[in-house]
Length: 321
Image 1: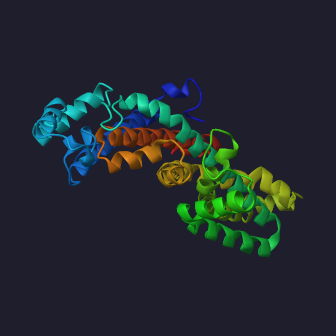
Image 2: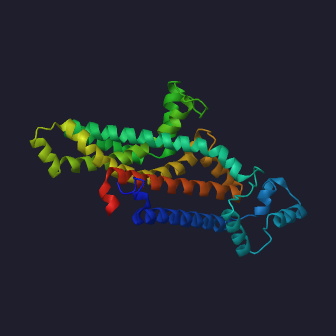
């Protein structure tokens, strides 16, 4: 693998790869910050009112004017934008309007919970997709048809509907799991399943197609001629081919899980980035929205880089492409 060894990390190709990833990450973060800054300004309402506690606070005109001056909202929009970029370059995300606390500190408390939810959901989705694809490959056409139907149905299920069904079944009817997300492992089961099942449907379809192609390839025919069993062929060759597109999709999948967390954390009353983002948008808490969006974008970029590295580890030909 060209980028795995210590010496290969110093090769021109590896240096270009690292510089390209860093440049891409900087561009994505700048684009997200710019889009959030100007997008929030298009929403009707006075940001100073949000700082003073929202429209219900009935803040005086003098108090609103003081808030505008303190937060630089009385300056031209371009100046405010340049001030924002300057703060971000210094690593300063500002203070939350609604929580009256540094955004970086609030994110430090919220990120672990959401990352745990997203990572567990991705792992469960992978296991379900691989298990279903393998089962369908080893059990003939009928099993493949059933598996394909289950994958399509799972991929089409909206998160809010699936969460409602799981709560009614496992909490209300059976009483096995809590309807809200507690700090216990049992409190994580329903939120993880809500995010993992639709994703498993997408991943399963892609993995099974890759397995079918691998099992009908020339090397598979040669292996069968040497007496290789279908199970051995699947374990030694087809699973590796199925993993490649799954890994390639994992970066996109992680971004999808973070966006799905907005719905899932709200339904299960689970503290996290998604639930806080919804609250911040509602009260026009610009620094909080900006911080959550940048943290999500950075996580997405890192996962994309890790999935790229994993692909190169499984398929060394990509390193020389």
